[in-house]
Image (cartoon, rainbow, N blue to C red; front, side):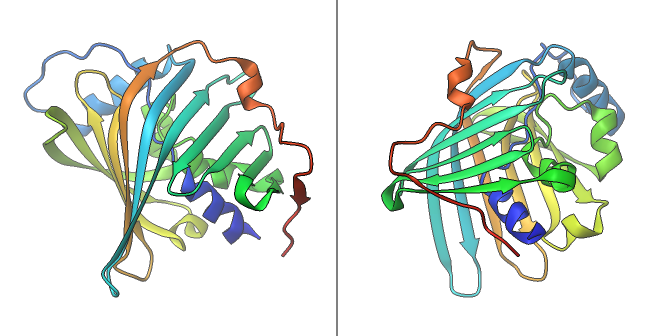
Length: 234
């Protein structure tokens, strides 16, 4: 069951940190980056972005891409909420609200409902990775390595490598590469390396808006009449 939760979470990996104007440093150290994330996390409330996720299966040389819009509401007092509306190639909605995770497939008129319970923290290793998360919290879950700087979408970005400390997480993901825009401290791209294979997937973020007003109703599990509800077991 834990594997299913993680599988659903991987669809909506969200590595977000809120934006504060960065000083124009030429060479970043890991300590400097973590300090920026600590500062940025204090002002994070919400976020919207366009998302493109590409899965690469190396052995059969297969590549598949899906895209959509992401909505995040970061509220440490009342619980973080996240919604991903995938629009291409097949419509699908993934909603995380408290201990509940929903995967709605309109073409099948079906919604899968997961009660995360005690596994909530494990799932959040992916869902809440970096958005509004202080650098010191990131250090608790990952071994961090500074890999340098690169240009992504004509933006200078710091590249970090994250190795999960949790054995359960490492059973799924061996390591993660995270690119952070140096001008905003929002993620530009992530690359997830799957354990035991050469396969990986890349999540790319664009048109990111920090702290927009998002109607609370967007995070409610309201589905069209006649939608079949399924509670996966085992």
